Length: 253
Image (tube, rainbow, N blue to C red; front, side, top):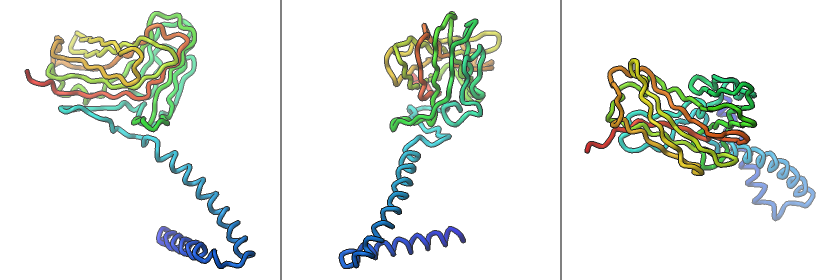
């Protein structure tokens, strides 16, 4: 009932101001002066609403899993960190094995951590992911730094050596940094590992892991995870604006 009344009031207000505008050429000046003040006050609030709405509606929708997928994709996924807000959005002086959400974990061997992780809202018009991950590194005295993304169980169901695992990501940094992506598949007592280097200086990056050349035991797959390994990360800020994964059937040769 309230929605019906709101629509009636809106139509009545619109009719009123349409009539006032149509009669403005003949309205007496004292009345016109009063109407102008009312119209300016109304316009101020409408402009405020339009500005806020334009800003919010231009952002990627929270929870969005949309991203382009290649032909032949039979499974795709954007981890939760890039889809929606986390209960704890950030960690300062992050120790080893710091988790952000259920799927992303930071690993390093620094005795004294000078690393900060924070989830951030993506604001660019070109962004598809609602959120990103910002990593600030001051002095780094460790020998390794990596972010581990655990695949959900669905990513392993039906996986075979006839698949490609494709990773698309958008990464920006204050200064150039070498980043490697390593796919890990645990099958029985063994773990298959495939490493790819991300092109240096490119913001939009795609790498593929071809399982045809692996020694994967398809019947014993237990767990899959992805390592993003950062070389010489000190005194840098890295922002991972998006991270998506696809499983694609390999073309039959």
